[in-house]
Each structure stands twice: as structure tokens, then as C-alpha cells.
Length: 121
Image: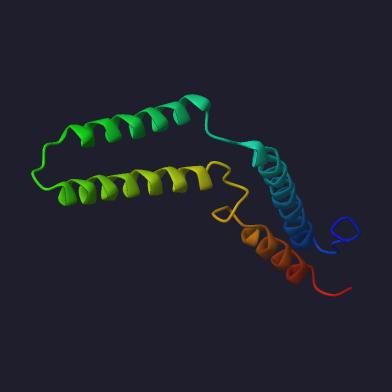
């Protein structure tokens, strides 16, 4: 549809040239986004997270508290926090997939704007 359009005036030609440049940028950004689908956190990052979780578990075991109930509650809360951090990190590991991801909304709006500017033929 874009390539079939023939601008008739000089301002329309300038606008068409700008539109084509913007569309080329859009296509390139889309290609980069598709290539980034395989993007993930490096294994070293995951190693640091798991070692940190293990160190926290050992350190909380060394804390002296007279009440076993209080000790278990503190340890449980810390374990819950560490677990939630690991869960969110794992869910965001692939930024273009999963429940927390970058959506196609911006690209859809650009396509709608281009079609609106060209109008019906």
C-alpha cells in the first residue's frame, strides 16, 4: 500500500519520503525485536542469584533467637522474599515472552497512524 502511493505535489513528495524513512526505521526495529526474542540473562547471573539465596539461608540459620517460633517466622519471611525475587527475575528473563513482556502496542499504533495518513484510495 505504501509503495503504490504516488504523491502529486512537492510537499506530498517530501512527506512521502519522510514516511518511507520512518517506515524503514519501523521495519528495522521490528527485525531487532524479533532477533531479541532469544535474549536471556547470562548463566553467571543465575549462579550469583542461587549462591546468594543459599548464603541467605545459611546466615538466617546462624541467627540466635530464643523463640523457635519467631526464628521460623523470620526465616520463612526471608525465604519468601528471596523466592519472590527469584520468581520475578525468572519471569523477566525473556523480556519478549511470558506474562511480563514487551507488547506489540507501539507497533500497532504506528501502522494505524500510517494507514490513517494515507487515507482511503
